[in-house]
Length: 193
Image (cartoon, rainbow, N blue to C red):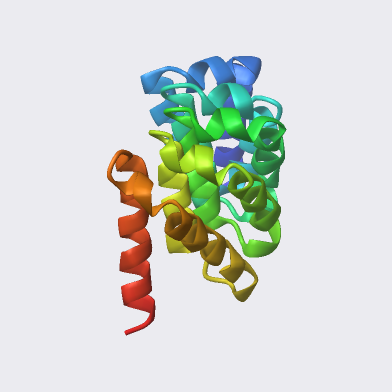
């Protein structure tokens, strides 16, 4: 257990960075530093999260910053990180198709409970045609197939499967759709053995 005095010292160190935390998170060393704090000093979670609020969109498209957001999603309970979901909801298309943004969305699908993530997933599936063909978006569709396990999410899989059946002629020309199709077949084989 970390002493109160040590926690205060760590908080003082983090306060020193203050508004520069976002800039720090965008550097390689800074990103690793903040991720270490997230993983090690759970008592600082509220403080760290408060420094990230309103900076999620900027960090999500950053080469190093997105790792800080992913680390928060993985190590902190969803009740503390829902602000990430809400900040990214403003422009889902941008983040689904972004080379770093899609990783944050994959983390949310894997770690957030259905009652928090379902509306977000529904917003993604509105553009399933576009995302199945996208170099990064297809990974999110695959994640939806693999990680939506709640009964309330069963229709998402049906919607994806129906899309694949209706567009099977695209398998020849579109490698990303082919990847989604393979994931769907693997999931179906695993589920119904």
